[in-house]
Picture: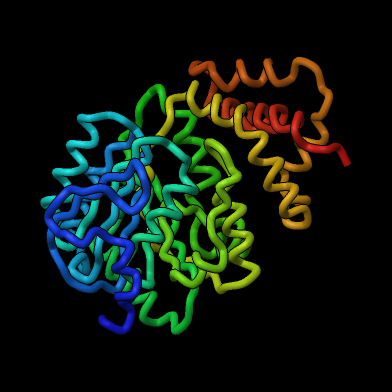
Amino acid sequence: MDDNSNPSHESALPKILGSERPGEHDGETVTSNGVGGKALLSICIPSYRDDATPLIEALAKLNGTEHCTLLLYDDGCCDEALIAGHKDAVLTYPSPARFISAEKNFGRSHARNRLVAMAEADWILLLDADMLPDSADFLSQYIDALRSSGRPALIAGGFSLQQLTPQKGHRLHEAQAALSDCVDAATRSSEPGRYVFTSNILVHRDVLASVPFDEGFNGWGWEDVDWGLRVAGHFRIQHIENTATHLGMDADADLIRKFGNSGQNFARLVEKHPAETAHMPLTRASRRLKGVPMLGNIVKFIASVQYFPLSVRTRALKVYRASAYSEFIDAK
């Protein structure tokens, strides 16, 4: 186990365990559970207004948790009740754990980069706060994969909706995720960089040092694809069946808003990866719909009406996103 630990990174961590104290960055407070020890991998969880306690409680019961440390980063949510719950979950975690609370929100890329800077191990498991492992061997499968890797790599487990309790007002996101996100390992391997979802990936520190997350992506959308495409140009990406359930389904209106507001991020992706994005159906559709009047409002309405069939609503959602993105994409 010691072969994969990295004591040189301990300087970035608080020197007093079992305490709460300022972090190395202004506006950060670090709470530690006081448990010591080295690890094969560090579980890194970025959080913003999501309750990570169900995930932390689940991780505590999994096979292999004794080989892992846990870091939870609250990216400036300012919710005192949520922060208190996260502190309690970290303080009672059976393996070494820290909770880092930031005063201001800087976005997911910043939160991930901070987590990586503070992680002890060379292998880092990135999990979103609203995920839940699907198997008792979730951690041990990743440990087996890193042990057999032999070199720095990115190992993606994929996600599912296996443990999701459907909610009426969230059916659009559930349908969209089932179609676009819940992809088996064989399909993901066909375009390894395109199907990197950082809500559930194991990655070596050398990969992250060479290819950091681009903090130029603001808000929601496409930073994962950008990062995956850049990683694929330099390191091996391995897709395996080791899924976690995405519990954080958005309400219909929130999902539609996110799709409509992420055009600038998609334009940034297209600008950085013109060859890889040129064949994407979304890129082609956005260019075809450029300048088509009123279409966006019509399909947005169809996507929002719960009485329409889900198949119609998901198609309308795709067209709405392409229409919204057309404002930011050059016609070719």
